[in-house]
Length: 382
Ligand SMILES: Cc1cc2nc3c(=O)[nH]c(=O)nc-3n(C[C@H](O)[C@H](O)[C@H](O)COP(=O)(O)OP(=O)(O)OC[C@H]3O[C@@H](n4cnc5c(N)ncnc54)[C@H](O)[C@@H]3O)c2cc1C
Image 1 (tube, rainbow, N blue to C red):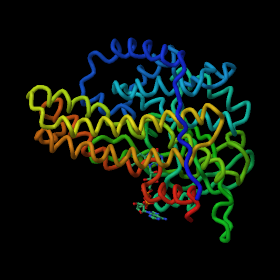
Image 2 (cartoon, protein in one colour; image 1 turned 60 degrees about the vertical axis):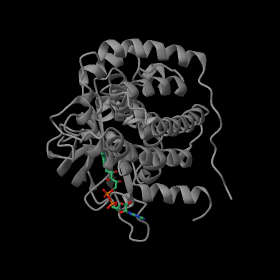
Image 3 (spheres, protein in one colour; image 1 turned 90 degrees about the vertical axis):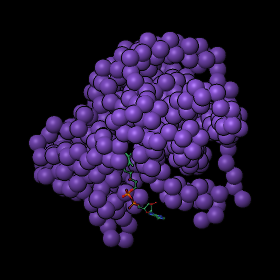
């Protein structure tokens, strides 16, 4: 049977040196941000904060300098990201561009697209959203129906994208459209495009989630003209490209660190009462987190070595979602405080937000069942 690679990976001295710099920056930058806002971290939208990170050189850290990047290692980027998430920094505005859209353009984009987009994205001035899911096409992404039909100088797009995080704030969407339909091969005929969201014919409607926030949207395309030079990669190559993009999407530390603030707030809450009966349970939760981190750092090491650890990333994403869905339940049991939204103590509100939000952690970026299918294939079981 095949197995997974989780080689031990030690962070190099330059990455640990960067950690101190990031911590010092965050302790200033986040001073006045309340815990319930910090609990939103990866979905927290603050474009001014993103611009500050751009100025520090912490967006597009691994990209080539000629496109506004900084040519630093995947391990340095990892340390920066884990400090951001652990502190609850609002990274949602630039997160998608830094994590996947920039990487995708580096891999498949044209020189013109890279020069036009990447330097602004690295400054935190140009924001992306992901246009993959549709009303009848989430897990089954190959069922994409939004159609791009050839016309003079470009493509006419009609259809609907769904659950598009931050579409209402983004400048560009990297969208997967159907440019050809072959009933015998639905993975063929898909193509990616870089879509300027100010083009006429695009309507963006907010969707409220269980937390009461409207961070994602329905995006409707009605006879939208997308010029030829906005095609990303080659026509019909969308399935292969989107699979590569999902590998970037699934490999980050937000897959187990979205709720770190709840753990620290829980420990603070229990510390207030002086009750030590929860110590063993807290020890178990921390041990579990440390193990997930070792696995996640190991993935960063494989990325740094130029490998594509899609199976390992799926394991960490699935285990991370299980952990993060268990944490609010345990926190509720251990501290005996009811979760609240919009009112109550800081702790009750952090618990309230993450109780509602964590349900989605086993959906975003691919559902648990889909990931387990990928894992089974990796083990040679399917
Ligand atoms: C917080 C959040 C943010 C998101 N942001 C974006 C975004 O920015 N852009 C974007 O394009 N999408 C986004 N999504 C959408 C997300 O990718 C989809 O929700 C996800 O892929 C599942 O698709 P679906 O909702 O259509 O569910 P479905 O695919 O209909 O699945 C419903 C259920 O059936 C199960 N299922 C489906 N197929 C199989 C199968 N073959 N075998 C076993 N079980 C199966 C699933 O696991 C799931 O439990 C976001 C979702 C969330 C929750």
